[in-house]
Length: 624
Image (cartoon, rainbow, N blue to C red; front, top):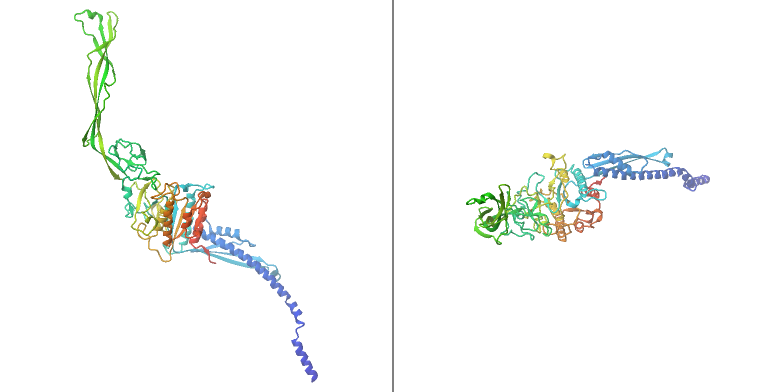
């Protein structure tokens, strides 16, 4: 029994013993541990390749999403090119984008060769990734406020002009906005275009109507008479047809003409019309501004001028007689015929006499009447007798007296009446800044825009909020009422007034006159994208069109603040080729924040900046 109890005790001790198991268990687990460590390295390598694939797919999807509406770009080719340029994996997988409304999905598949796992019969690890990019701030209103001044013709070192780059960039921006609107409700994404220089052209809207009779246009300045400091307010009473132009800036040949003349027309339809030429640079804020009318001339009296001259006239008579006739009783008178005559100097220095009579019946004369008193004495030359019978010839010179009386009736004592030109066809459509402070805000619907006639009137008219993107969505005759066409119609000309462009960029998104925007839908973001290539040089009151005006900048700063107060998000772009002008403080301060201000030194940078803005406002982003 004791032995049995001892055996049982030894068995229990053996069962609890661990000293020999460690080496055995380590030996048994060594292979799995090595395989697990190797597999970890293989899987880590696979994850690194997948991360590279993910980055490449994101880049490809963003590229396709950014160019979704560019018909010249094939999305399959673009996706593959961008993916290949960014993927660092072992293979060359083919990727194909899938477009669906406001999203694009790009998927990639590849395999990564293994090392340790290959020992376990797994020679490769398959990897797969998908990138989804979405866009679509589905409710937004955008005002494109675009500089159309003359300096936009400037080219950069590549020969690309700023206006050409602006058009290209604007087309690409519109394409991205159209893509954002693809699955939105109609009207949720709308764009307005405001080309500007010194003025803004509002003559014809995209609804096909004209604003010639619009109640919000002020024609007072247009129809009013001359009042500039460089012009006499009314021509004097001695100024009428045939007179010299009374103004230093010159006169125009006829109403609405741009041809200068030095004398007032004395014949034709516009006889006596005194039409002032455009203002010059000494008229602050009004350089190139035409007065839209002329003074007519009405004579109230007749000036009858009489000039009497008494003139001695030497008259030569050619005489002849036969010498044989002299012996006759009585001898016959010689035969004399009148020959040449020569005027002498007047016997005095006469002054005309002028008689003024009320009323005017027309100009007449000059009419000259002459009376002659023949001389009674003469002088004779010696006779020259020749022939047989001898014929004698000689001259007799008489001194006659001729009295010339010249009478001229002319208009005198002119009165002048200002006659305004008709609004059409003279008005090209431009309006100036509204009265201060309505010139800087969008909250004064009763404030009117003064009409202006100026050689620098912007060619491209404003286009109110709409979503007629291009000719494919345009049903108008000629398909010229779409946003793309409006961009193409822009022409560079005139001086810089950023204030009026920004003010109309605000006003065009407001209800009521002049643009009658609809009520702002809920959850709609309002944007203003303002591009200018120059410093402010003039507005309705200040500047000469050439040099920066701090007074215009002051108006601009107020307009920027008003737009921010209205809740607009403002992007500003300053195109400064090669940095020649330095920074634009007023544009930088106008932007909602510094990330929304772009200082561009090449024309091509306009395209890059507009694409960046498009991505931001359409929320183009990777959503996976």
